[in-house]
Amino acid sequence: MPWTGPSPAAGSSRTRCRSSCAGSWPSTRRSPGCARTSACGRCCTVTWERRRRHRCGRRGRADSLPAPESRELLVPSSELIAVYAGSFDPCTLGHLHVIRRGAMLFGKVILAVGNNPSKRYLLPTEDRVGVLQRVTADFPNVEVDRFDGLLVDYCRRVGARVILRGLRASTDFDFEFQVGLANQDMAPDIQTVFLLTDPAHIFISSSLVKEIASNGGDVSRYVPTPALEAMHARLQGA
Image 1 (tube, rainbow, N blue to C red):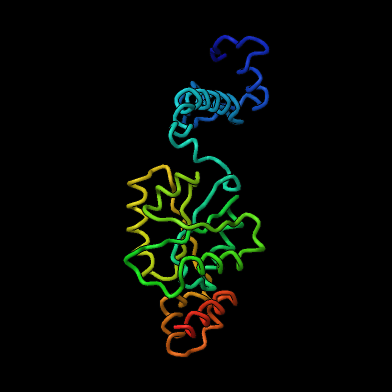
Image 2 (cartoon, rainbow, N blue to C red):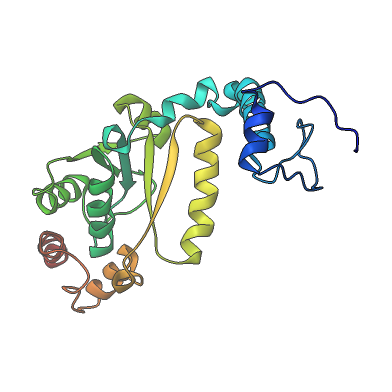
């Protein structure tokens, strides 16, 4: 009669595993942390998973949390203030598309109308602000303001954490990418979010609209009605 080792204690995990496997102990590759693998895989699986979870929980708990300075970024977008800045000279349907999408993403969107003394505008600041107020009258979470100086300084003054930008083509991205990196360097706590323009408006720009309108062309397909009226009044009075 062949020699057999001592029987395991009744009720032990090995006994239960032996009974479920009908005494079968095939020669299989052992998993880390387990002395032997059963046919049903219970002993080794339970032991290995328990040890793995213990190690991951012990070592990964602190690493899984964001850095202290980045925890504030976990605020829901519906509670964030975003600033969409530009000259809006004039506001185009492309601008309006970005404004509409931004209003759906963020709790509050501020349209910041810039005023650069070294730049010549078709519409004065008051007209550009008025046009934006009219075209966004149906957006309860959109406000219109004006600003001078650095955009990141303005964002800090109004408590905005996001700079909203629209992209039409790769040429836009080259410029916006450079500006976005500069803003990130000056204000790491303020994030830049890019939104793609509707393909139907991808070729529309304020400069193109002004060029067409100044030569008597019809731009009614490219700008909202308040902007069209303001441009006609300005060009006819020039």
